[in-house]
Image 1 (cartoon, rainbow, N blue to C red):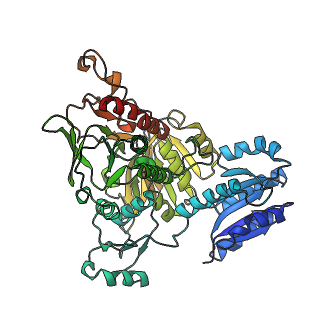
Image 2: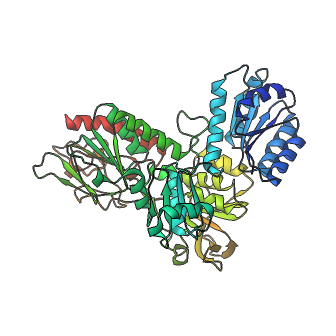
Length: 552
């Protein structure tokens, strides 16, 4: 397989665009074509010869009807490629309102002004973002930071791949008898027969029994790092709220530690593309947003301990501060932020639960979507995470069905996602429907689902190779002491939501304060939160002022 291609289609500005994309020719196969027919034929020829197409760059100088035919044709030919519209300055003002709806509906990924001279880094920054996302979600990694050796891609292997995708580490899976497999096993002779074996460029190699072990190997365990001081703030959970609190607290001089049980970014880190986050007009994946925030927090001095969940909070013996417990050791702190987020609710269908990891996945499982090329995929859920998962899956699957218990998506999903879903010919929405049964093929992989119409009670069986369950919020805070009051659903109560009889001197806790002084809650775990990335980030940032007031 040769270098991935960038196909540039322009009727009148071919030389300008050829010069513009010359800088990419070292690592991409740049092809310049003049019209719709040539663009589609070039794409077909590339695919037929085993090449991948990373990006279509389409000049708006084509006839409008031909232009939309070109957009639709390229999407049909290579659904995984990114699509960029470029407009010459002479028509950019007129093109903006004409094609803005195409960007909003997801027909194209971006509309940019054609460069007017050399070193237009704003333009190339946007192109770089598109290629970056394509490489992260579609292309096989050129350099594998982590290699997984196993004779069978089982449920655990897929969990490891999903985790590595969420933390932004390129990984590959190899059979023990392959050239790579034999080379890795030569360094891990004691682990032969215990699968999977995981090897990292960092130098460690061995059997990996679960995701937590992988996280410990990548980031170190808390009991391997001495915390011999009482810190100012311990953040439990490194989702958007916890990351924002880590950035702002450490940037203001607070000694901050962040504990994360699994992947930095939490549930938001599984989002393939968040398009409505402030400051990212072309969108950003949850993984990249999380890794950037982690890097920012590290720069200001936050220490991250990944791989052990918090198991409890208790007062210190002298009563002067809190102790956050983990299986790997305790951390003493003057204040605590609970930002552990939520898990997806379980479907509760025994036949489906038995196939988790073998075609059935809780969450977006972005890495799994690539394995379902040409198959029918079912997404269960009506929130933004479900919409993002459907759009991502539609780049690979031949057909995607969204099942939602409500009549439609309008009550629970952002308008921009609904617009993208309505336009995408590969995605169908079935309202008032739920999965009630399912079954495997001869090797135990999901083969079919039984779907019930909740209005009529009728059931029908559909073939499906992938089922992604994004069923809504299930709080995980059983580790918190009883003194931290929760609502009837298990979410942490804060501020004026705390019952009045528990206010101190008839004064409620601060807006993000819990019933235990010095313990705060932010993000999805908090009762009444919006369950959006931006709102969780805002809460994580704003809690720092309350922490300052408490410490004072």
